[in-house]
Image (cartoon, rainbow, N blue to C red; front, side, top):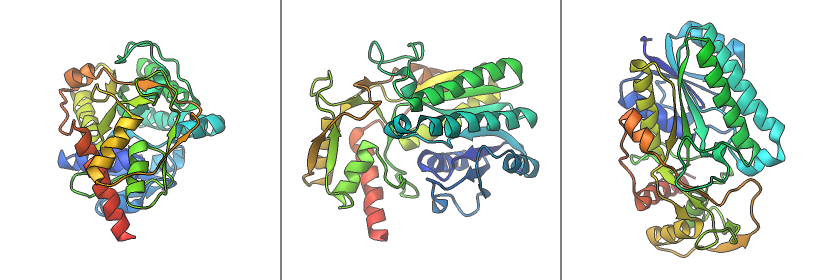
Length: 330
Protein backbone atom coordinates (compact mmCIF):
# COMPACT_ATOMS: atom_id res chain seq x y z
CA UNK A 1 0.00 0.00 0.00
CA UNK A 2 1.45 3.37 -1.01
CA UNK A 3 2.18 6.42 1.10
CA UNK A 4 -0.88 8.40 -0.09
CA UNK A 5 -3.52 5.84 0.88
CA UNK A 6 -6.78 7.37 2.12
CA UNK A 7 -9.04 5.80 4.74
CA UNK A 8 -12.67 6.56 3.88
CA UNK A 9 -15.06 5.94 6.75
CA UNK A 10 -18.62 5.35 5.62
CA UNK A 11 -17.25 4.57 2.17
CA UNK A 12 -20.09 2.18 1.36
CA UNK A 13 -22.66 4.94 1.77
CA UNK A 14 -24.08 7.44 -0.68
CA UNK A 15 -21.47 10.23 -0.71
CA UNK A 16 -18.70 7.93 0.50
CA UNK A 17 -19.04 5.51 -2.43
CA UNK A 18 -18.91 8.38 -4.92
CA UNK A 19 -15.79 9.69 -3.20
CA UNK A 20 -14.16 6.25 -3.47
CA UNK A 21 -14.65 6.52 -7.25
CA UNK A 22 -13.33 10.11 -7.31
CA UNK A 23 -10.21 9.13 -5.36
CA UNK A 24 -9.53 6.22 -7.69
CA UNK A 25 -9.95 8.50 -10.71
CA UNK A 26 -7.29 10.73 -9.14
CA UNK A 27 -4.98 7.72 -8.62
CA UNK A 28 -5.33 7.84 -4.84
CA UNK A 29 -5.48 4.36 -3.24
CA UNK A 30 -8.30 3.97 -0.73
CA UNK A 31 -9.31 1.74 2.16
CA UNK A 32 -12.96 1.68 3.26
CA UNK A 33 -14.35 1.25 6.78
CA UNK A 34 -18.13 0.93 7.08
CA UNK A 35 -20.42 -0.84 9.55
CA UNK A 36 -23.03 -1.34 6.77
CA UNK A 37 -25.86 -0.10 8.98
CA UNK A 38 -26.81 2.19 6.09
CA UNK A 39 -24.13 1.51 3.51
CA UNK A 40 -24.11 -1.18 0.86
CA UNK A 41 -21.05 -3.37 0.29
CA UNK A 42 -21.83 -3.74 -3.41
CA UNK A 43 -21.25 0.00 -3.92
CA UNK A 44 -17.55 -0.44 -3.13
CA UNK A 45 -15.38 -1.86 -5.96
CA UNK A 46 -14.23 -5.42 -5.26
CA UNK A 47 -10.55 -4.51 -5.39
CA UNK A 48 -10.82 -1.84 -2.68
CA UNK A 49 -9.71 -3.09 0.77
CA UNK A 50 -12.88 -3.15 2.87
CA UNK A 51 -13.39 -3.47 6.62
CA UNK A 52 -16.78 -3.95 8.19
CA UNK A 53 -16.67 -2.31 11.57
CA UNK A 54 -17.41 0.74 13.65
CA UNK A 55 -15.51 3.99 13.34
CA UNK A 56 -15.61 4.31 17.13
CA UNK A 57 -13.83 0.96 17.65
CA UNK A 58 -10.20 1.70 18.57
CA UNK A 59 -9.17 -1.94 18.03
CA UNK A 60 -10.50 -1.92 14.48
CA UNK A 61 -8.83 1.42 13.77
CA UNK A 62 -5.52 0.21 15.18
CA UNK A 63 -5.64 -2.84 12.91
CA UNK A 64 -6.31 -0.74 9.82
CA UNK A 65 -3.56 1.75 10.62
CA UNK A 66 -1.12 -1.09 11.31
CA UNK A 67 -1.89 -2.86 8.03
CA UNK A 68 -2.08 0.12 5.67
CA UNK A 69 0.12 3.18 5.29
CA UNK A 70 -2.70 5.68 5.75
CA UNK A 71 -1.78 9.28 4.91
CA UNK A 72 -5.21 10.89 5.21
CA UNK A 73 -8.74 10.22 6.46
CA UNK A 74 -12.02 11.27 4.86
CA UNK A 75 -14.72 10.87 7.49
CA UNK A 76 -18.32 10.30 6.37
CA UNK A 77 -19.56 7.73 8.87
CA UNK A 78 -22.46 8.97 11.00
CA UNK A 79 -26.19 9.67 11.12
CA UNK A 80 -27.81 12.42 9.06
CA UNK A 81 -31.61 12.51 9.43
CA UNK A 82 -32.73 15.80 11.02
CA UNK A 83 -36.14 14.71 12.44
CA UNK A 84 -34.60 11.52 13.80
CA UNK A 85 -31.96 13.58 15.60
CA UNK A 86 -34.72 15.55 17.29
CA UNK A 87 -36.33 12.32 18.51
CA UNK A 88 -33.06 10.63 19.52
CA UNK A 89 -30.47 13.32 20.25
CA UNK A 90 -28.22 11.18 22.44
CA UNK A 91 -27.89 8.63 19.65
CA UNK A 92 -26.65 11.39 17.32
CA UNK A 93 -24.18 12.71 19.87
CA UNK A 94 -22.83 9.17 20.19
CA UNK A 95 -22.57 8.32 16.49
CA UNK A 96 -21.55 11.72 15.16
CA UNK A 97 -19.59 13.28 18.00
CA UNK A 98 -18.26 10.67 20.42
CA UNK A 99 -17.21 8.18 17.77
CA UNK A 100 -15.50 10.90 15.77
CA UNK A 101 -13.56 11.77 18.90
CA UNK A 102 -12.28 8.15 18.96
CA UNK A 103 -11.28 8.41 15.30
CA UNK A 104 -9.44 11.68 15.88
CA UNK A 105 -7.56 10.15 18.81
CA UNK A 106 -6.50 7.25 16.61
CA UNK A 107 -5.30 9.69 13.94
CA UNK A 108 -3.24 11.64 16.46
CA UNK A 109 -1.80 8.44 17.95
CA UNK A 110 -0.77 7.17 14.51
CA UNK A 111 0.64 10.41 13.15
CA UNK A 112 -2.04 10.98 10.51
CA UNK A 113 -2.09 14.70 9.92
CA UNK A 114 -4.65 15.15 7.10
CA UNK A 115 -8.36 14.93 7.87
CA UNK A 116 -11.37 15.78 5.69
CA UNK A 117 -14.63 16.02 7.60
CA UNK A 118 -18.17 15.63 6.32
CA UNK A 119 -19.92 18.54 8.02
CA UNK A 120 -23.23 20.18 7.18
CA UNK A 121 -24.99 23.48 6.54
CA UNK A 122 -27.21 22.50 9.46
CA UNK A 123 -24.57 24.08 11.71
CA UNK A 124 -25.99 27.50 10.69
CA UNK A 125 -29.60 26.90 11.69
CA UNK A 126 -31.78 29.58 10.13
CA UNK A 127 -29.28 32.15 8.82
CA UNK A 128 -29.85 35.89 9.06
CA UNK A 129 -29.29 36.35 5.33
CA UNK A 130 -29.03 34.31 2.13
CA UNK A 131 -26.63 33.21 0.74
CA UNK A 132 -24.84 32.15 3.91
CA UNK A 133 -21.06 32.39 4.18
CA UNK A 134 -18.69 30.49 6.43
CA UNK A 135 -18.44 33.55 8.71
CA UNK A 136 -22.16 33.44 9.55
CA UNK A 137 -23.12 32.60 13.15
CA UNK A 138 -23.42 28.89 13.91
CA UNK A 139 -26.62 28.18 15.85
CA UNK A 140 -27.97 24.77 14.86
CA UNK A 141 -31.74 24.24 14.98
CA UNK A 142 -31.46 20.49 15.63
CA UNK A 143 -29.19 17.94 17.34
CA UNK A 144 -27.85 16.73 13.98
CA UNK A 145 -26.36 20.14 13.28
CA UNK A 146 -25.11 20.47 16.84
CA UNK A 147 -23.43 17.05 16.73
CA UNK A 148 -21.53 18.09 13.60
CA UNK A 149 -20.61 21.51 14.97
CA UNK A 150 -19.15 19.85 18.05
CA UNK A 151 -16.84 17.86 15.77
CA UNK A 152 -15.74 21.08 14.08
CA UNK A 153 -14.84 22.41 17.52
CA UNK A 154 -12.87 19.24 18.29
CA UNK A 155 -11.01 19.55 14.99
CA UNK A 156 -10.13 23.18 15.72
CA UNK A 157 -8.78 22.35 19.16
CA UNK A 158 -6.96 19.18 18.07
CA UNK A 159 -5.29 21.08 15.23
CA UNK A 160 -3.94 23.59 17.76
CA UNK A 161 -2.59 20.87 20.03
CA UNK A 162 -1.32 18.27 17.54
CA UNK A 163 0.13 17.81 14.08
CA UNK A 164 -3.31 17.72 12.49
CA UNK A 165 -4.69 19.76 9.59
CA UNK A 166 -8.24 19.51 8.36
CA UNK A 167 -10.79 20.64 5.83
CA UNK A 168 -14.37 20.65 7.13
CA UNK A 169 -16.82 20.63 4.22
CA UNK A 170 -20.24 21.99 5.11
CA UNK A 171 -22.64 20.26 2.71
CA UNK A 172 -25.83 21.87 1.63
CA UNK A 173 -28.27 19.41 -0.09
CA UNK A 174 -26.59 16.55 -1.92
CA UNK A 175 -28.44 14.83 -4.77
CA UNK A 176 -28.02 12.94 -8.03
CA UNK A 177 -26.02 9.82 -8.82
CA UNK A 178 -22.88 8.76 -10.65
CA UNK A 179 -23.46 9.63 -14.33
CA UNK A 180 -22.01 6.23 -15.30
CA UNK A 181 -24.49 4.42 -13.05
CA UNK A 182 -21.84 2.81 -10.85
CA UNK A 183 -23.31 4.05 -7.57
CA UNK A 184 -26.17 6.13 -6.24
CA UNK A 185 -28.31 6.69 -3.19
CA UNK A 186 -29.31 3.25 -1.94
CA UNK A 187 -30.08 4.23 1.65
CA UNK A 188 -33.19 2.43 2.92
CA UNK A 189 -36.07 4.72 3.94
CA UNK A 190 -34.25 7.78 2.65
CA UNK A 191 -35.74 11.18 3.49
CA UNK A 192 -34.02 13.42 0.90
CA UNK A 193 -36.51 15.17 -1.37
CA UNK A 194 -35.08 14.20 -4.77
CA UNK A 195 -34.52 10.58 -3.73
CA UNK A 196 -38.11 10.37 -2.43
CA UNK A 197 -39.49 11.94 -5.61
CA UNK A 198 -37.57 9.53 -7.83
CA UNK A 199 -38.82 6.58 -5.77
CA UNK A 200 -42.35 7.86 -6.35
CA UNK A 201 -41.72 8.04 -10.10
CA UNK A 202 -40.71 4.35 -10.26
CA UNK A 203 -43.60 3.26 -8.05
CA UNK A 204 -41.65 2.57 -4.87
CA UNK A 205 -43.70 5.19 -3.01
CA UNK A 206 -47.36 6.02 -3.44
CA UNK A 207 -47.01 9.74 -2.81
CA UNK A 208 -44.72 12.56 -1.84
CA UNK A 209 -45.26 14.65 1.25
CA UNK A 210 -44.48 18.36 1.37
CA UNK A 211 -43.51 19.01 4.97
CA UNK A 212 -44.74 22.52 5.56
CA UNK A 213 -46.26 24.94 3.04
CA UNK A 214 -46.40 27.97 5.34
CA UNK A 215 -42.73 29.00 5.51
CA UNK A 216 -41.71 32.59 4.85
CA UNK A 217 -40.64 31.82 1.27
CA UNK A 218 -42.17 32.81 -2.10
CA UNK A 219 -44.27 29.63 -2.42
CA UNK A 220 -44.40 28.68 1.27
CA UNK A 221 -42.10 25.65 0.97
CA UNK A 222 -38.49 25.21 2.08
CA UNK A 223 -35.69 26.41 -0.18
CA UNK A 224 -32.46 24.43 -0.53
CA UNK A 225 -29.21 24.57 -2.49
CA UNK A 226 -28.68 21.24 -4.31
CA UNK A 227 -25.19 20.04 -5.28
CA UNK A 228 -24.52 17.00 -7.46
CA UNK A 229 -22.90 14.21 -5.48
CA UNK A 230 -20.11 13.70 -8.04
CA UNK A 231 -19.12 17.37 -7.80
CA UNK A 232 -19.09 17.04 -4.02
CA UNK A 233 -16.96 13.90 -4.24
CA UNK A 234 -14.40 15.76 -6.36
CA UNK A 235 -14.35 18.51 -3.74
CA UNK A 236 -13.09 15.93 -1.26
CA UNK A 237 -10.23 15.01 -3.57
CA UNK A 238 -9.45 18.71 -3.97
CA UNK A 239 -9.44 18.97 -0.16
CA UNK A 240 -6.84 16.18 0.00
CA UNK A 241 -4.71 18.04 -2.55
CA UNK A 242 -5.03 21.20 -0.48
CA UNK A 243 -3.95 19.48 2.74
CA UNK A 244 -0.94 17.95 0.99
CA UNK A 245 0.30 21.40 -0.06
CA UNK A 246 -0.90 23.80 2.67
CA UNK A 247 -0.55 24.12 6.43
CA UNK A 248 -3.74 26.08 7.19
CA UNK A 249 -6.98 24.25 8.00
CA UNK A 250 -10.19 25.30 6.26
CA UNK A 251 -13.97 25.23 6.74
CA UNK A 252 -15.82 25.51 3.42
CA UNK A 253 -19.41 25.57 2.18
CA UNK A 254 -20.32 23.03 -0.50
CA UNK A 255 -23.15 24.16 -2.75
CA UNK A 256 -23.83 25.95 -6.02
CA UNK A 257 -25.13 29.22 -4.60
CA UNK A 258 -28.73 29.02 -5.85
CA UNK A 259 -31.83 27.74 -4.14
CA UNK A 260 -34.90 25.83 -5.30
CA UNK A 261 -38.10 25.42 -3.32
CA UNK A 262 -39.67 22.04 -2.68
CA UNK A 263 -42.44 22.83 -5.14
CA UNK A 264 -39.93 23.92 -7.80
CA UNK A 265 -37.98 20.68 -7.42
CA UNK A 266 -41.10 18.53 -7.65
CA UNK A 267 -42.26 20.36 -10.78
CA UNK A 268 -38.82 19.79 -12.32
CA UNK A 269 -39.02 16.08 -11.43
CA UNK A 270 -42.42 15.90 -13.12
CA UNK A 271 -41.02 17.42 -16.31
CA UNK A 272 -37.88 15.25 -16.36
CA UNK A 273 -39.87 12.08 -15.67
CA UNK A 274 -42.70 13.00 -18.00
CA UNK A 275 -45.37 11.89 -15.56
CA UNK A 276 -47.49 13.36 -12.79
CA UNK A 277 -46.73 12.94 -9.11
CA UNK A 278 -49.08 12.36 -6.21
CA UNK A 279 -48.28 15.11 -3.71
CA UNK A 280 -49.77 15.58 -0.25
CA UNK A 281 -49.35 18.46 2.20
CA UNK A 282 -48.03 17.49 5.63
CA UNK A 283 -47.06 19.37 8.81
CA UNK A 284 -43.61 20.85 9.18
CA UNK A 285 -40.88 18.46 10.29
CA UNK A 286 -39.08 19.21 13.56
CA UNK A 287 -35.70 20.83 13.01
CA UNK A 288 -36.26 22.11 9.45
CA UNK A 289 -35.40 25.71 8.58
CA UNK A 290 -37.02 27.82 5.87
CA UNK A 291 -34.08 28.44 3.55
CA UNK A 292 -30.41 27.45 3.18
CA UNK A 293 -28.38 28.61 0.21
CA UNK A 294 -24.59 28.62 0.12
CA UNK A 295 -22.07 31.29 -0.58
CA UNK A 296 -19.59 28.78 -2.04
CA UNK A 297 -17.00 31.27 -3.32
CA UNK A 298 -14.37 30.13 -0.83
CA UNK A 299 -14.72 26.50 -1.95
CA UNK A 300 -13.97 27.52 -5.52
CA UNK A 301 -11.11 29.84 -4.61
CA UNK A 302 -9.36 27.91 -1.84
CA UNK A 303 -9.58 24.46 -3.42
CA UNK A 304 -9.42 25.62 -7.06
CA UNK A 305 -12.61 23.61 -7.55
CA UNK A 306 -15.28 24.17 -10.18
CA UNK A 307 -18.55 22.24 -10.59
CA UNK A 308 -19.16 20.07 -13.63
CA UNK A 309 -22.86 19.37 -13.04
CA UNK A 310 -24.39 22.67 -11.91
CA UNK A 311 -27.76 21.93 -13.52
CA UNK A 312 -30.88 20.87 -11.63
CA UNK A 313 -32.19 18.85 -14.58
CA UNK A 314 -28.90 16.93 -14.80
CA UNK A 315 -29.03 16.22 -11.07
CA UNK A 316 -32.59 14.93 -11.42
CA UNK A 317 -31.83 12.90 -14.54
CA UNK A 318 -28.92 11.03 -12.91
CA UNK A 319 -30.95 10.42 -9.74
CA UNK A 320 -33.87 9.08 -11.76
CA UNK A 321 -31.65 6.92 -13.99
CA UNK A 322 -30.17 5.34 -10.86
CA UNK A 323 -33.62 4.71 -9.41
CA UNK A 324 -34.87 3.21 -12.67
CA UNK A 325 -31.86 0.90 -12.72
CA UNK A 326 -32.56 -0.18 -9.15
CA UNK A 327 -36.18 -0.88 -10.05
CA UNK A 328 -35.11 -3.12 -12.94
CA UNK A 329 -32.63 -4.93 -10.66
CA UNK A 330 -35.42 -5.67 -8.18
